[in-house]
Length: 270
Image (cartoon, rainbow, N blue to C red; front, side, top):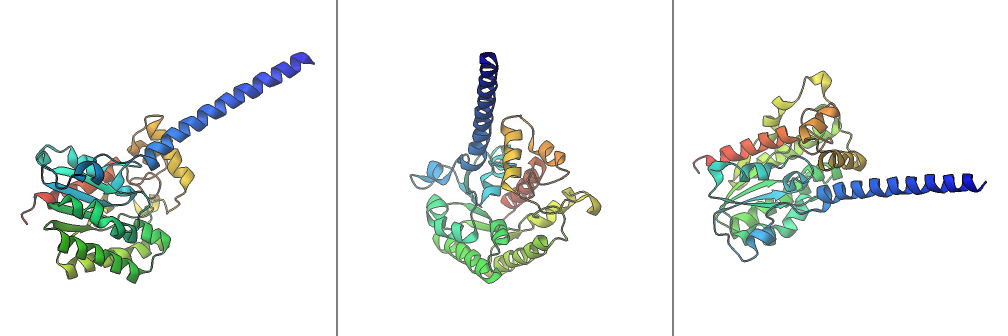
């Protein structure tokens, strides 16, 4: 009887240790993906005012923050042709256009940027923000950037949510992308067709996965990347996706394509 109790205790202790190790591993991945700040935040780069080199500020949500999925801002920062620029990452997980508007002065205008790239709206689509409110928030962001800076400004269209473009959420997203293009044209700033440039990275229509995001899926992707060392491309591929690791965030190929679009704009003659 005592031997059975001792064996049971050993099993429980071993199970508890495995559970603690698992939770610790998942916790590390969660921190790195969701809580860790991106490289070169506005506070780091612009805390004392203007940067020593011309600043390019990328403003948006988690796709810009780049800690869950491919990091397109980091891609730009690492390109030799842009060695003379200071790339500032003003991405913040979960932000809507209204959230970005609330911090545009401290996170963008304060950097006295030479160029600003704005990619925001995926969370507005997911949250069902009324299109007129989204348009008003985006217009207010642009107006503040135009009055508070002398920067070149570009509004970027949103990548798909899920890879099946026939779903309700992607039909809704098309309206937000139209609002982005309309706002750019009306405000006299540039529009970068990121969505269109992403489409040739998708597989055949019959192979595309519809939108099915969940937090556990995102956490699983983070764990596979940060703990198991898998690339974002491999993680997307393992889920049968060509572009997105979790139906929202870009893999490395997608981030590189977005960086290409931004790079073409940055090197174009104003």
